[in-house]
Image (cartoon, rainbow, N blue to C red; front, side, top):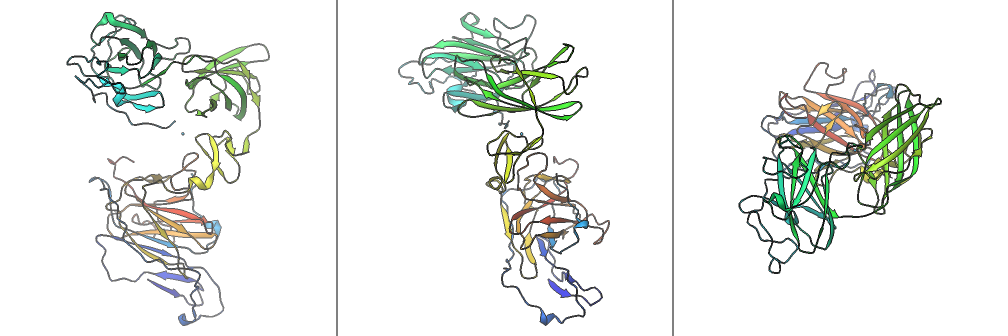
Length: 533
């Protein structure tokens, strides 16, 4: 790498890469910082002085321990970053929510087992189901306090319940549950992909041993999950069948078992709305629930000046909830054609057991852009104040979300006195981490970059193996977005025209970076058509 000063006509620093090496198994990653300066005459190179406040970081090979899929585009890639103080008018940057759980196949069965889970099987024998496979919930479910949660898939058509609709057939799944404590227990399929039926038997293959059966929680509110509850003594075992209302597709379901709670209906203490446009509003709700049932629906009632009414339901996509039962919901809803944005709006919420709150009138407010810590937010219409970001509907410190997820490998890089860095990188064994707004999502490497001065910087990827279709993006939040790609500063798949126009093997961008703050540079590539992005 050579950094040289050009003639007086150009009066600027330029960087030139000089190498007679061939890189076949790794990529050279070169970051250059070349400040533009003006002067009256050329100066000899030996007049240049190094600024000792900058440290040159030696390069090293980036090794990841997961192999790239054989059909994924992988190539050795070089990254060159030119930290030139460029006119910001040339800036080429593009700025751009209920956690999912992996499904456990109900094929992980227990057969002939006498393990009572939390019970001592020597005290009370635990029933089995002959040769029929079943899921032992005490052993297979995820346990959260007194709740047992199991995700599986129905398959085959072995059973029917007393509440199974006549003329229907449905795929099903068999479970056994042994009560660790005496009391009334609730079996709930909220969160299932399919319309369910749940029934409980004392003997797995005896139709007449059924103790309870439930189809839908509520027809009126169109809550198609099921809830069945029974009294059990400590150590009692029952068989629980989750059945599809109709159809033999191997669909996923969620079965939650928990002690039944008798509680009050949910209550609302806040209902505010922001008008987005003439057809849409965003509503923020906060309130209290007294049971473990989540809020699943919001019912809206529009009332016009002449007394006309229009009602609609909106399924709740995500709810934040505290240990004390406080909940928060933000929903975006369409205004009925016959209503106007200023007509009165009332609403109420419905929980998973079809308990309904009282009607509450909605207050019209201006967009909120300075919400404080722990405030209800969505990052778009309900925005957190300075130094905060919206994460799972709550405002929290931004700095806590900037770093990369645990387990991601990244290189920390800094500039020397000339702003240069040479590092080695190799994407051929890299795994997919995330993507950028302009593409990527295949083999990825991450560099942590801190610049000494606030300004506009140029970054360029130079691959050494061909063909290569690199993607380059820079983020100030490594893997966190309040909304789509909001943590991204810039993304590019093309070279800046002044460099090498039309060269698909280059990717470069210019981006404004703040001094003394870690930025994350992603070296990525475009996958082939058959590679998921």
